Amino acid sequence: MSIIKSFSVGDGDMFYILHNSDNFTIIDCCMDDENRADITSEIKTEGGNKGIRRFISTHPDKDHLKGLKYLDEKFGVVNFYCVKNAAVKENKNEDFVHYCTLRDGKSAFFVYKGCSRKWMNISDDERGCAGINFQWPITSNQNYKDALDQVKNGNGFNNISPIFTYSVNEGVVVMWMGDIEHDFLELVKDTIKWPKVDILFAPHHGRESGRVSSDVLKKLDPQIIVIGEAPSKHLYYYSDYNTIKQNSAGDIIFECAGDKVHVYVSEANYPYDTSFLTEEKGRNDSFGSYLGSFTVHK
Image (tube, rainbow, N blue to C red; front, side, top):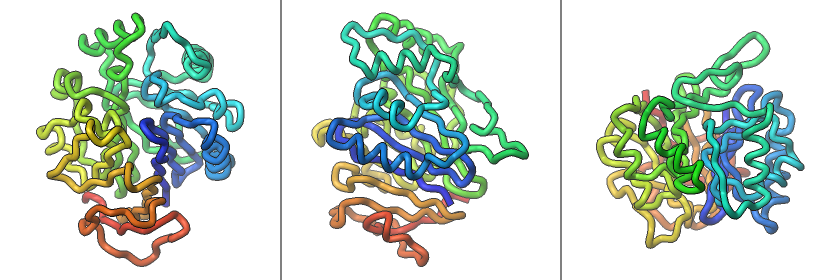
């Protein structure tokens, strides 16, 4: 069994994966003075005993970095994953400075399409892998090179976001895209091999500006799209797909057990249709309010 948690942190992103191997993965960081102690305490409880702990930074914007320095001080970012970049900012806060320290330090691992690393996606006799694989960036792609040039000049950070999946053998497949923007994705989508996924976290917090086009969605065939916490007026609702809206759901937990995924939210009265989920035995109500379950793609 593995656990995927998407924290409700307002207009920002923060996730963790408690793997069914000796791995723990944090994706992005968005904590303020009010919630950082509680979130970090949970992360220490869930991941502190894992032999491999990694942090994947999709891109260096404030809503994906806030609290990074605090998290590193309290938990320890042992393995720092990001795309290779030379991003700068005119107005540097302590978390961006810390991002640059980690990016340019010995703990950094630079990700790209098809990259491999022991225990990220390679198992051995010591421990199993985390099942994380990167579909993007293709570092030779000119559009991507242009995006890297933009961040060297202090802008356009969204479009250096990687695209990657977490998958379990004969189990769930989940995709993240960071804050990659619709117009940029349209330029590069034909260079990417799109796998079928069970859960898609909509890019750019579910905004219209990060909308995934219908031809890409047809290839991905997601069973659930999680729409983030951008202001409602900016959201794209993916009306042809089953969705969970984090604005109303609060924290979301996906409990992945074999070919079943059980879905929980922290808000007891989630107001939207969940008839696409079925009720299953074996659920763990300590995770929150149970919405239902689904069977992964075969």
